[in-house]
Image 1 (cartoon, rainbow, N blue to C red):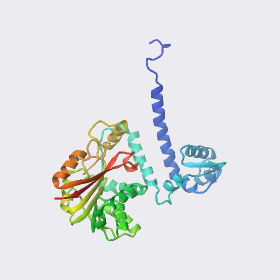
Image 2: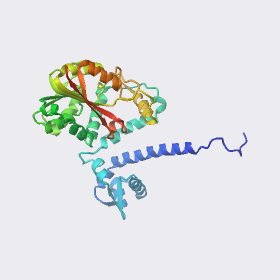
Image 3: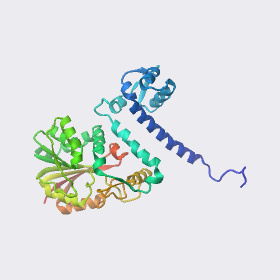
Image 4: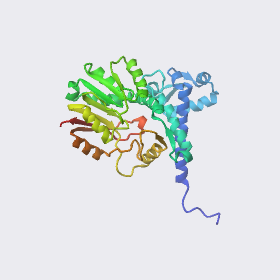
Length: 349
């Protein structure tokens, strides 16, 4: 090796990649720690660096760095020596806000831990029980859907005549139940039900009580149980059976003729993905649920169909496609904007 000679390829790109990656991790930890310390609760009113440092129990020097970084992140604004929340932070990072995303942001730390322990996570042998994890997922999804996605979805559905004339609606694997609660608020004559695992329905009932709703719950497992009833609308959103033909056949049997099946899901593309797609797919395979039979691509399970295959299967069952609406809103429980779809079909034979 001739030391004075330059390498054939510059290391600049590698250094930039490493720096960008580490900065992202640092910023996430600043955000998570700021939430934990109550920074965004205290800064609902204007405070100086010294005042905040006393309230959260850190030295003024570190408080200054923390505050200045949050200003650079556009999560705080500064006027002279005073700091306060931006409108976004008041809405989504203040623990008293109905729209706060604190639970979700903090829970992302679990994913960070898996990546930090990649040499173990990459083996894909980490087991989780649905009964243990799903209630927490339900809470996070309820928290997140209120920031726009629920409103957009409900606004779309209520414009269909079939919704206006419906008497019964089933939210299959409905989790938090926020969708049927909203549907019932807009159509008080619509009797809504949520079908989900008993452990999940414990969380559902909390939201039903919170919003003083008449939505009812039906305990069961959609893999093994029938849904019963004769429903005018069956709605489902981001659930493990949303692309499964066996579940679709059960939906057909439980739906009245002329009724709508409204299915909002992530349908993976049957082709190589972007870097972000590959990272999501990799993370999806870090852990395995004991009963849900996860498979390779993100948010897919054993027996799932790709979009075109799923459409063909529904049509063979006796559904007609009414509309396909893209979902372009950032959906935090499922990562970045994924181009999800709301598929609206009607039972016609």
